[in-house]
Amino acid sequence: MSGRGSAYPIVMEIHDAFRRSEYFRMAALYARDIEWQMHASPSIFPVGGQRRGKSAVFLMLLNISLHYRFDHYEIDDVVAEGDWAAVVADVSITQRKTGRVIRCRAASFNQVRDGKVVAYRGFIDSFDAAEQMLGRIIAP
View (cartoon, one colour):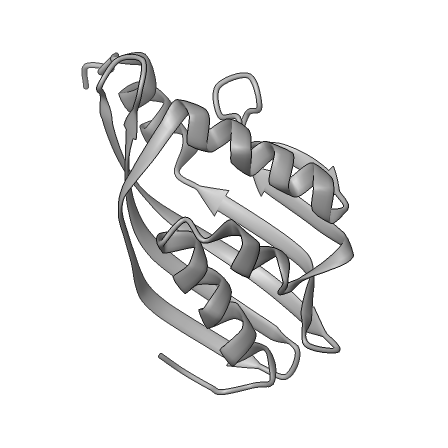
């Protein structure tokens, strides 16, 4: 872990709440007009795409919790400076419909202002995760 900007404690609390599925706790730390974007195909990943506003973000999180169970979420790296914090995590989820376990690495970039996250940008290795979700392995 590197740096301890003003964003650090807020972002760490959000990730802890996410890991524990404590969405009300997360909601208290997001700005009402948060700009939220996950760079992944929305047709495969319900979390993918762009949302604006706290209610849109939490409708998406509700949708995810209906289709997936989070089994493991461990933060590997955090870099924080000023009002920005970047997090890299190791994630394991189970697709409720199929029982498939999907493991991937996720990175997020969070901007904090006045004690609230105002911008979130997330990235996953979407090709690898898509293969796992669809139950396909592409031969070398």
